[in-house]
Length: 289
Image 1 (tube, rainbow, N blue to C red):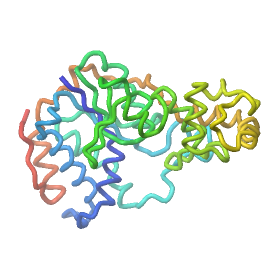
Image 2 (spheres, rainbow, N blue to C red; image 1 turned 90 degrees about the horizontal axis):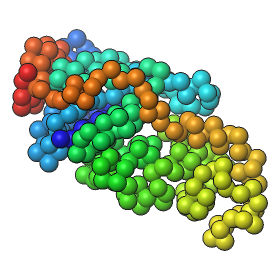
Image 3 (tube, rainbow, N blue to C red; image 1 turned 120 degrees about the vertical axis):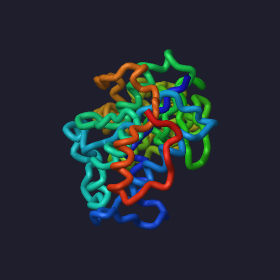
């Protein structure tokens, strides 16, 4: 038994900006992104290698979350393509028509829901597969039991994969992101810190709080240690905030039980209405409720 949890917002962006031709629905709406997500989910459900048994998709709707109240520079929906924004409710309806549980995040983010699901049900399934390469989710990876899946590159990222990709253990990811920054989320990081320097320090000291204030106590491998120590000391309060922003809230009040996530098939009536609204769907579900 596997649990697949999917970052629907990532899937919507990926589909909307893909090279596929634009699709206009009968009512004149651009539905390229929604059709792409539907196609992607149907492909996942039909993939014998993925062997989907339990599945849920989380969406950011709206993009803003509680983190915007903590830091003005955090990511917002400003500048988003209006055609993409217009599909944010539609893509949730489309996902539900496939018989898949939808988590529509308002105060929290989709990543928080995915992290919550992984922590909550990780011991109850053979494997949790988090379907996004987003480095934020690396912090909840556990061995080969909770993994990330990069479908575009057909790559599974287990705990060793997180270390190879980022240079630190999964539990160090929030501190690592706080130091190096995350442009996708609007986290600036500490000036001068790169991925390798941050990894060297965190592999030695584990957390930002434990990194000595004096560069003389840092590993010899860190180049420019006096300059970097000065920068970190000047930004320790900010770094603590950045770590908080990068730390997933794995206690989102998801209403479902694990049994509720079992995929029983698509809703035929809802799917037919969806297909009519979108102007046709090339693939058909393999199973109906």
